[in-house]
Length: 543
Ligand code: GAL
Image (cartoon, rainbow, N blue to C red; front, side, top):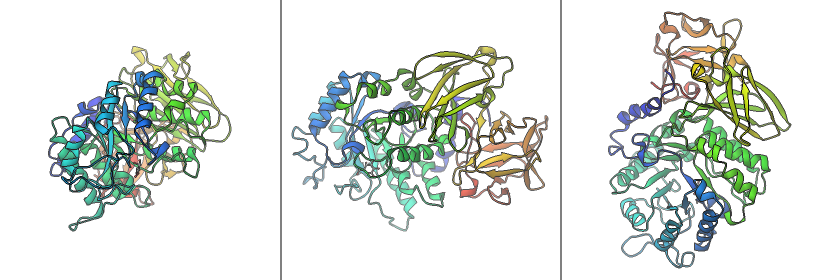
């Protein structure tokens, strides 16, 4: 493991590229070649607000509104159509056709309209026989459809995964890999490859055994530029809690930080700023959390009717700069208890980001110690900018936050030259159980519910040692087949050296075994079994 480094994030793709070369031989875009989409996409999509109730006027009105209300100039420069734009039949030559009642001037006309207003134009299809809405899918028509889209001026394609069935002896996971791999090849061969938004992982989320989901999230970064990893955000007319839906997708995103880097983005789904079930703080939290993740910022709302306040928070320059930061690092959990989530990451100019979410139902106050932010200097004073109001404060031992229910604070912390060293610091947690690796004063380690204590916050050193903040002279050690903490060996014993793979496995250099949640804590490394996949702090180098 090692220090902060852009290449570290990219290097993880190399391992995957070798393994996946047979399936994805024409690497274009993706984590492999970040130039196609170096920072996450921003824009509009109709789905969560209007579902199949879409037409030309909605898109022209939306483009007009975004061009005049400041959203386009804030960076929201994509207008994307979702499902249900098509006619139910392909044309005699096999081409897709738009629904002429919904789009009387046609999609090439609409594409020109939005481009004239300064937007890119995106579209939706499906890798199965039919889209989720029952329109013609692209299966066996991939090349024709990609070229049709390009001829309409489209540069961004979301490929959904409804109506996909295992064939030719493949498992369902292999079937998705085969189809999305084929799409990748088709798109790579184009003169101007379309940006490829993949929905495959979403079809494997939510099962108790996560191995298939982990397997799919392994290959999507090499095949495309972003992937929907989990459930749909609650649609406008949907039953249930919009906040719970945001928290659900937020949680999924926290499990996948290691996959993200310039060129590939985890996609926790749309922003829904006009959802009537959300409070002002919840809407702002949604935006701030997605920005802290460097997630796609695709708004699904009736934009012409957004309020001034909604446009103002969505246009927050400082938070958009975080979202679009060229490191594309995803904020990771430093600490979690029943109410408070604390997350950090680095930014390309060396600043640290601190994001604090109050998941609880009452106001919370907290003093967050500086070492929790990965800053280890002594006698240092840092400047923290509150990204909501731009106010500055000097901090040296801790930063004080007070948050109303479901509110989120975000600080950008600049580090004086002499205090600029960052040690990746945060939770080591099992991404299936959610349990946190916990050190005890008796030197045992266990997996427990996350409780916000320093005994669950680990520093990951450049030589691959893990030290709990509660006892920084102790290191995670394999001793006689069991895992404990012992005095750190300054000569760097292999028993205290760990490597972190993109698979989420934490492997010990001495035994070659993998940390495993369960009664026995070191086991042979298996293919991404539930017990062996962990989230670690951002900035940890992948092996
Ligand atoms: C879902 C997808 C949504 C939307 C919808 C269209 O599978 O997750 O984002 O695209 O299909 O039918």
